[in-house]
View 1: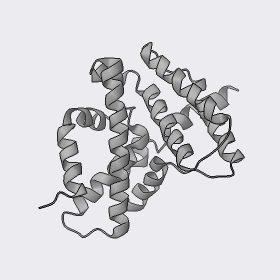
View 2: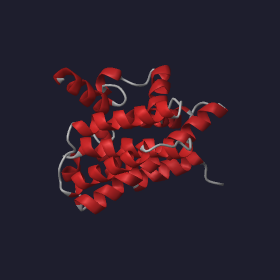
View 3: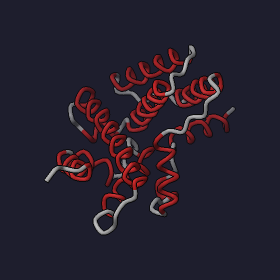
View 4: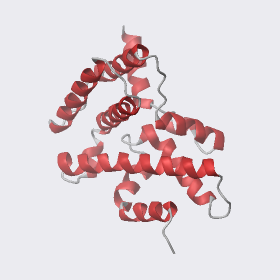
Amino acid sequence: MENTIFDDYASWKKENHDLIYSLVHNKSKIIQRFSSVIAVVDYLYDYRLDNELSEDEELIFSTGFDYIYDQFQLIETILENSFDNDIKAMEKYGQTINLLLYINDFKIEISNNDLKGNEIKQLNDLNDKVYECLNNKENAPDEYFQLLNDITTSLFEKNNVEIQTIDQIFYEIAIEYEIYDEDEFNAYNYFLNKEIEKRKSVN
């Protein structure tokens, strides 16, 4: 029998059990921003065992799995290249890795929407600076979070587009399914919003 995407998801979780278990069950800062995507995909995987998914739900599952796969691929690369596969050492810089993943999300949205502007170079420069922080075993300074917000806001306004990232979309889906504990996970984009609000209170 031909493998389905659900079989692929089960195989992927089995192959990457140690990393997934460590990050998910310890509520790692690294994946906190897209924990709603994981919640929705896991929910639909279990739900389809006793129910038939609609075409929309199958698309949601496929989109979510692709996103999770890409996020974990990047995390695994960072784990191998910067932390010698030491998950505990990597977790110390979870907030910075979360920021890096967020930057990567926006770079994908910029490419998908063919956006133009000098902010793209600024975003790439910020990406390099965050990588430099990881290579130096440092957490990114607080102002990098505000800088990301400033760059993306300017770029999207200039191109007259409104971008909703995958984690934001899945957050709304999770709320609709009533499977996401907002108090426990502190809502989507936790770290970016937290740092922006902290800086506002200081200024």
